[in-house]
Image 1 (cartoon, one colour):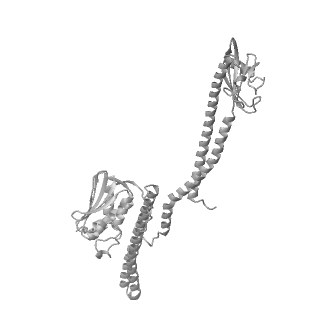
Image 2 (tube, one colour; image 1 turned 45 degrees about the horizontal axis):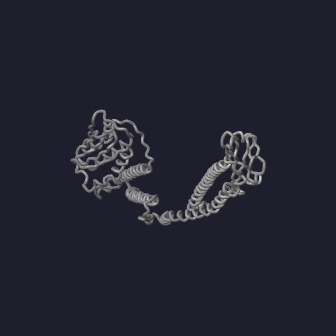
Image 3 (cartoon, one colour; image 1 turned 30 degrees about the vertical axis):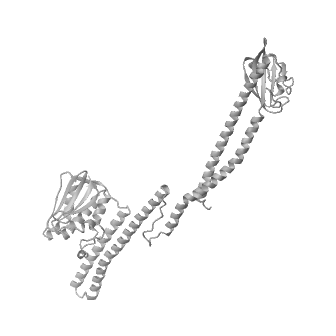
Length: 452
């Protein structure tokens, strides 16, 4: 089944709403007018009853009122009854048949009553009557005054006809107006749809037109353009990441293949073969580390980095990391020391925090000088884990991009590292709800700031 366009759905909903409103309004007017006409009819009956009552009290005849002064032929009538229900006087269409039964006569003798009649002798039309007590000399009589409801029925019928004609016309006009207004309102959306269909990854910088309407459509266009900007930035990061990863993988793969080819062609002695295998093994280890680093970054970007949070003592973390690098420091004639406040703890994943601190210690041993210090301090609800050395520190122009992927202080370090160490440190810090910072303080100072 083909879906109904939004424009038609809006017009249809508008038509239904207008139909309900017009129906309710017409019904209200019809009932209201009927109520007013009934009230006016009762009021006119009271006036006629007062006039005819005065005539009866002065011993006038109802038949003499048929000249149009009090009773109109074909529309009004009157009848005078005694206490026994006998007709004493009546206008000509009624004859001698009483208009009230015994119960109504008793109630009318006590006070005025209204009643409705579906038909009246001589007048085959619905009518409304008012029976009221009246004094004539010493006798207490009952005067019955009536008016046909034909004028009320004709007025209501005329209104009903006008509503049945004007209502559909108004509904048709309102529906057409709703259809046109819906099309006018959706025109900017259609323009955005056409532009969105033309947007592709091959043409960056394309944006949707933003109508200056100051309403939800303008805000929608701005939001979609912001989303396109974020998608372009993410796509650019992914492309750069893939390009940098390909570049980084190509170097160790090329060296590994070269070493293996040299071993096959020139490995005449066990010593040469051993050297070639050792070189190939070193490149394979570098490839494995690079693959693990890339996998960690990809998992973090996809929100799939699983962390097992637990309370960790800062001193225990530093001791574990320092023990791993103790032999390298001894070989280089350097030391790895740690110092922290007693009972200072953080909440995090032990494996990932040790990996991040290990990357910092590895960088300090590779590129720094002197003693490598691991220190922790509490400040403003956070815990900072510092790794410092006594080397030359970072070049000033490198600090703003120190944690970017595949960034290195200088091109001559291209063969020494992958440029992912500090990026992984920041990745792990952010995954823990913290951040990573780098500065120069008598040497390189890199810290992981975590919530306390």
